[in-house]
Amino acid sequence: SNNHTLKFEIRTDGELSQLALGMNGTRESIDLSSLKKSENGSYLIGKPLQLKAGENRICITATNNRGVAINDSVSIQYNRVAPPSITWVNPAKASTESPLDKADMKVIISSSTDLQDANIYLNGAAVDGLGIQPERTGKDLYSISRSLSLKQGENVIYIIATNAGGSTRSESRTLVNRISIPPEITWMNPQSNTIVTAESLGIEVCIKSPSEIKSAQLFVNGIQQAVDMSVQKSGTPGCAYNWQRPVILQEGDNNVFIVATNEAGSTTSEKRTIRLERAITEKRLALVFGNSAYGEKSLKNPVNDANLIEATLKMLGFDVIKRINASKNEMEMAIREFSKRLPDYNVGLFYYAGHGIQMDGINYLIPTDAMLKEKTDCKFEAISINFVVEEFEKYPDNTNIVILDACRDNPFRSWVRGGEGGFRAINPTSGTIIAFATSEGAVAADGSGANGLFTEELVKQMVLPQTIEGVFKKTRVQVELKSRGAQSPQEWSKLKGDFYFKK
Image (cartoon, rainbow, N blue to C red; front, side, top):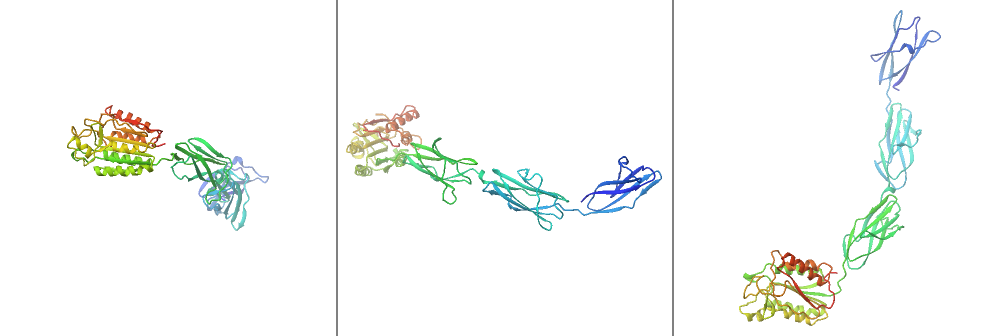
């Protein structure tokens, strides 16, 4: 050891006046007042020394009234001892998960001299207050094995061992008690946001948990709809618990999430938005015209309007016949096809965007190839709206819808959309609703954007859950607001029941 006590005897007839110790070139005086004479008149002295590694040269100098005496120097060799080295056997990794609340640990300690002390520290506290007795497994080798009780969460373990050369602290090891890990929830059905038509949907989640699930709860729009205080384990690989429950949905968006709880706490799943849209029971058919290409008098919006209406109607369950920039023959052929198919449907919709005029009390839709040089040409070159309405008269028990977004200007006065003139009111037949983009005798603007003002607002209302009367009423409010009262849509209805584009 580097700690050594030097013992020596001094014999003198007189009183000592000075005493000093020299070691490795340094000199230290010894306090004479602490010395006591023995019965034979000598002094027995013990002096603690701190040795350096290697050779240590020591000499004593004593002085009395007769002179000075210096002993022959002595040499003390200090062979330094290395502190212990500690190697982890178990756990071998810096961090390890434990499925239980107990874990085994083992270390090997190498020491060239006997171990003076060894202890295990768990979460900063010594496991054995008085230390432990390592097992000697070979020359200079010791082993420590112990089963440790773990708290929930992370448990940090290290060893401190001491020999004559000093103390060594091992690397730390972290044991994670998996019982403290909260559940992990994975959606099996639905795997993403979805739209359904039934009021009930079976939801399914996979719950991973190292400890028993105490409860599983189903919430819909923030309200608990179901709870299980005992969840059965699953035989599915990688899924400790497979939880299935029916969820009762309300119309529209339903925000659904699961809360699972184990010993460690609760976990909330990702939310799923399940939208309930009532199944469309009617068979729906639509005929859509968008005429823009009138040569020098072309219009900007009707083709865009027809495309927008088509996309919206298809989304709402309509089969759509569409014609763009149609000639008179193309319009008549399309109307004929529409009429032939109507008997197989119980909802029929006719939409027209383009030029239209009133002549002698009759409303006409103008094909793109119409040659209107004289007033009487309308009968031969244009399509009477009555031609379409009369087809609807054959099916009074159906829901029949006519939507006209036309300029309604008179080409004999002006050939631009928004000119003078206007459609005449049409008395609808039983089961029919007729909507104009503006009021009787007034005109509708072509619009400054990609779509006409009326159609642009109409499709916004069609996709909202409300009656068809609500659709046209709210469209009128928005068009009047945005046109500052210059345009006011109008509709006439003889529907026999409530109709919803979307419920």
